[in-house]
Length: 147
Image 1 (cartoon, rainbow, N blue to C red):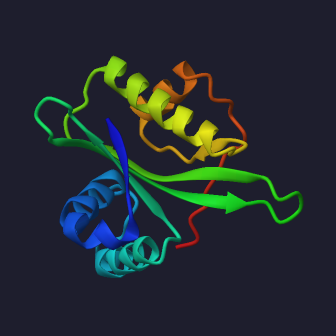
Image 2 (tube, helix red, strand yellow):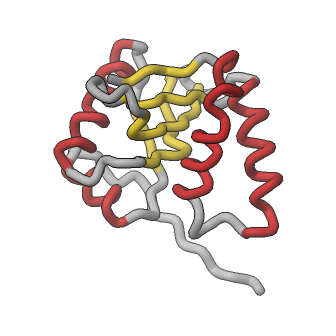
């Protein structure tokens, strides 16, 4: 079961959301910027710039995954899309669980008439899953360190 958390309920789930975001981005967040990153994340969630979905195990009622996303409106044609900001699992290790989670998320986004979902992925397991879910590669990002 997935539930979207209203911005008014973010504070009661904040520690869990913050932990998930820090873990999901641990390899790219500069340790000296964690406080600023978390503050900006909280501000964006409270102001509805970002949205949060929690996956809840129906039997234990435990939260098993966190998805943070942003709705983007194309300024040229008005098309709405979803940009995945963070996805983190506390317990889903089976591909079947991930596929079910993504399928439910996709269905809920289709009901809202979004054009597509986009995700920037650095985790090899999620890249593999995206391919299994028939996601198409839209762009590649190359980075040239300047320092």
